Image 1 (spheres, one colour):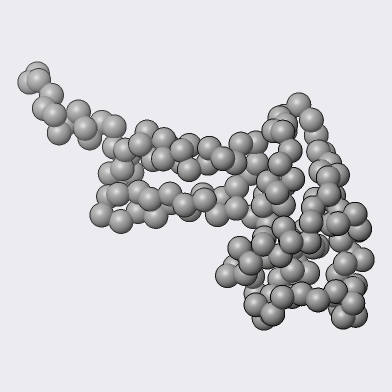
Image 2: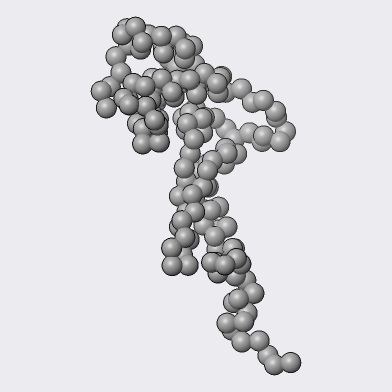
Length: 148
């Protein structure tokens, strides 16, 4: 048996038809998700010319929970975690502007209503009010939302 060459050794650590180093891809994902501990987020992995690029794509609920600045809690030890903290309407607008490109809504006010619905399902209040009440105020015109 002849000794293994360097290329043979490298091929042992490559996986799949793309020939990527899985450890390096895993390390890139771990580095990209370091700020999102204990939250479920989506990671977009783009592969081009045998190079993997990772991009964090957080959901609306993850952005709302991160806006609370709560200490991390273990999901395995506590089930059905309620996020009962208060969020400001300005934070909701900022989250809606971040999520605007992924929303199917025509206007920013509709995206804000989507984010308020997500805040309601997460269990948080917005400026001390129930999120559905603020949605009703936006529909009636009592609350002004930014144009774009």
